[in-house]
Length: 74
Image (cartoon, rainbow, N blue to C red):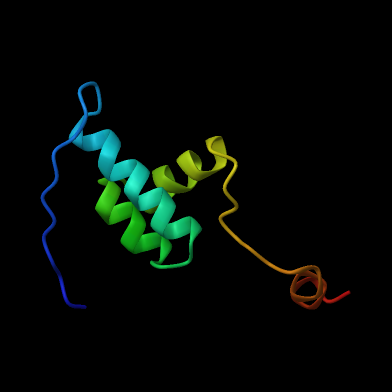
């Protein structure tokens, strides 16, 4: 994986940690990065990041109805 560095000025009241978390959530939600990559960017374990996704109502597993039926063997 090719790694780049990004430097930005954050608005007052937004910490680096919060900005990294929001950035990671959005990239994961848009299917740009994996769960592991998002957790690493945000500075959390995969398990903790999954809990944060749940609190944000973002599905960890995004199956279509047909894929879910197939996965469940229905």
